[in-house]
Structures are given as C-alpha cells and as structure tokens.
Amino acid sequence: MLRRLYDRVLALAASRLAPVWLAVISFAESSVFPIPPDALLIPMCLARPDRAWRLALICTISSVLGGALGYFIGYALFEVLAEPVIRLYHYEAAFARFRETYAEWGLWVILIKGATPIPYKIVTIASGAANFDFGVFMAASIATRGARFFLVAWLLRRYGEPMRGFIERRLTLVTTLAVLGVVGGFALLKLL
Image (tube, rainbow, N blue to C red; front, side):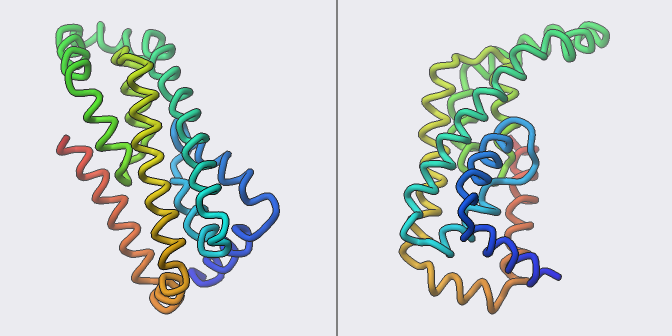
C-alpha cells in the first residue's frame, strides 16, 4: 500500500498541475491544513530536479502568504473565540505575560519553528494572537520558510538520483524517519 501511494505521489508530482497543488498545500499548511508541503515538494524535486528552485520558490511564497492568513486568524478570531475563555478562567494576567514574552522572543520562535517539522500554523496563529509585529513576522517567515524549502530543493537537486534510489529501496525506513521527525517536532514544541 505504501509503495502504491509513493508511486501515485510521484506521478502527481510529474503532472502538469502539480505546481498548483504544491502552492495550495503550502498556503493551507501555514494556516489550517495538517499536511506539510514536503509531501509534494520532495517527490516533485525528485521527478523534475531541473525545476527544484522554482518549486522551492512556489513553496516559499505560498507558505508565507498562508502564514499571513494564519496571523490574521490568530489576530481577528482571538477576541471572538479565546478572550471569553481567558476571562472565564481569569487568565488575563497569564495571557498578558504570554504577549510580553512573545514580544521579546517571538522572532526566535518564528525563526526556529519555521524551519522544523513543527506545524507552522501554530506559529502563525500564535503570532497574530500575541499581536506580534506583522512586518517582523513576515520578514522572519520569508527567511525561515525560504531557507527550509530551498535547502530541501538544493539537497534533492544535488543528490536527487541517489536519494531517489535510497527512498525506493528503503521506503519504510524513510517514512518512519519522516513520522519520527514530525513527532519529534511536536515534542520540541512542548519543550519550547
């Protein structure tokens, strides 16, 4: 079953509409969708290494624009959804401390978490809820998301065929490591 899914994703990655789907998934992952764009970016770069830079750029732009939507969700919906709960439990002081801490360390949170398997939507929504400086948020998002996607593109462009062979021979190992990376990202999130 895993082999069939891998083959289907590779086929999709080589299709004419693959860049559109990559943009949609990259945008949505930064605000609401649970699947990271790497699920398409990696096979797309393997299928067409000559397009790796373009694909990384699509991921970066779409992810940053999706991040702006995530920021807006945190900013606009916080008052409607979260503030009544905070008042109900008398956590106003705790949330004020969170905003102060985020104002001081938010840039580092964005830079570190934007390059990890931790779902980026958590960072984008938290940044909006904390009223973090939007310009700094966008600049940090461009830097961190761009670095992440262009690094993946470079690695796959440089080592694509050997990586493809490795992935195809050891598909179960690769997927296990990917899952461990995501779980590790969530564990790291709890520690930070």
